[in-house]
Image (tube, rainbow, N blue to C red; front, top):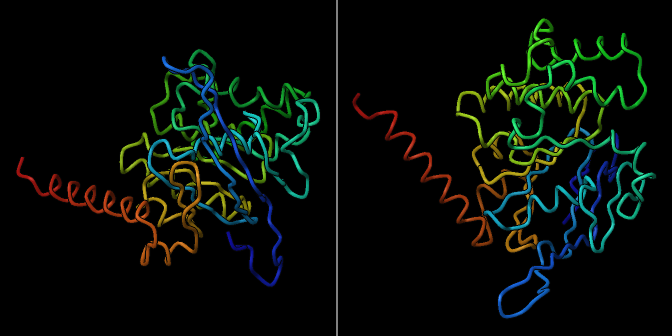
Length: 281
């Protein structure tokens, strides 16, 4: 993939650079045990500060495996993962501790990513408590992050279960911001929301990026969302990157059949939405 880090201030200054990333899983089948299945093969990309790369593809293309590997929730089999000048792909759990705050992940299902019995304050303050911050500092930071994502600080005493779906996703974003990350990995983070809420959260993420120069790795199959948020697009198909480039170029002139199929799915979804909106009630 060609460098997308171009500009007068920081030429080729990639915040995240992935080279030769590969990951296999061993799965048993009834006629043969321990069959290796390749989820990601020889993947390479980079993201600069303040930019968004969308990793798109059909279900099973390997997108989420990439997210788990670069956040080191899983160990890649081979390749390099450079985060702000440090190669993190082979670091031990102990070595990763001071680095993990720089890259945070926001999941599709905010309900299962947070303990529903916790209060919002407990959810937000937990990373800072583990880091040894005092109670006053933790609460001040939690109140600031609540305001930043459009939630009232008075709601810190509410349990997670009392928040709506969109509010929970805002809370998940606030939690990710608590450790002042440099890059956020959005693993289908908006796909479970209704269209109106999805647009509101997308606007929030764009505003946060403009304010803090966050880099985003946006993992999605929704090209309508991708076209709005991403600077560049990388298309995955059965574990490999088959096409990449600037968003307008990919949207207007797709070269691979996997990309064209995603665009057809987008057009079909838009037609269905328009038909339902115009249907008599």
